[in-house]
Amino acid sequence: MTHGNTSALAARRGIRPRPGGSRRILAPVSAAVLAPALLTACGGDSGTTTTSGGLVQVTVGGGGSIFDTPLQVADANGYFREQGLKMKCVTLTAATGPSALQSGSVQFYDSSPTAFASALAKGLHQLAVSADGLGNPLGLVVSKKFAAAHNLTAKSPAEQVAKALSGSTGGSSSANTKAEAGIFIDKYGVDPDKKVKWVSLPSPAADKAAINSGQIDWFVTSEPIPLQIQDDGDGVVVADPLNVPEWAAEDAGYGQLVVTQKSYATAPPDVVEKFATAVQQATAYMNTHLKDSNDQTVVKAAQKLLTGVPDSVVEASLQQVEWPTDGSMDAAGWKKTTAFLTSLRTLPSGAEVTTDDWTNKYLP
Image (cartoon, rainbow, N blue to C red; front, side, top):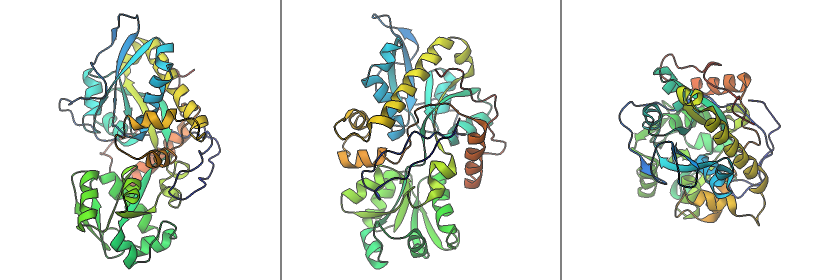
């Protein structure tokens, strides 16, 4: 993946102007569990078939997050149809996604770097064919009580926030987000293992409930949950990629990938090329039009994934991701992403991404 210039976000934790079209390489994704995948429909049947209208139907797995927005934009803007494709989307988890791809239940998976690398470490023959989102849209949200006790606001300096977390109780529903929180506070001399009491919780929704009940003081997770808690008046987002550069694409090289089976990429290569082309058209459109307040295409597409989330929170969450004008990847970007993942210490032994595991050949 090639690199461009990264523009600074203009407003803190609100609706921000769109960063420019910078690109960064994506790396390995979350751990794959080889149990049968449970597919929650975000749109229909699975399998590659030809519809009555002559379109090739492909089934795509995603996590139901803002990173899946390009799929919805490509569908809404007719990019898939222009390529002769019809997309069916199913919601998967990091555990079920790689195995669903392996079994052929889905033909493409919108994957995180962590899941991709972990799947490769398990011997799954998967191939990254495009980068469709860059950055780590995380938010650290503290309860209103904790914010008041430590004089924290959305504009508090990062060092003040980190030092306030010493002696606190943090919620953890993901090894990745716990590690990412640790990277942030450790930078300012707060040992995440010794200075924070961690409460393990099953999901970000459980994190949200725990902060509202007072069981924990704070937690880190991907947007839009932190911003939605703030919008509801139940907490304050005191850290995000704007003031934690270690979370941003520029430093972490993290992002999102379009992944397929190597065997599928060689069997009908025209379908993979058409799919990657449509998704790249969508991310390029998002890069250009998200900052246009008169164009609600992207926000409406994201709302299909984030049901019930206020418009302002959806838009602010979308602004925390860099949407590339070009989905290509490069070795330097993968090296940066791999270094970030290694620093989290959440990858299985032997996890690595080589030049045999990603390609730009299907991009226009």
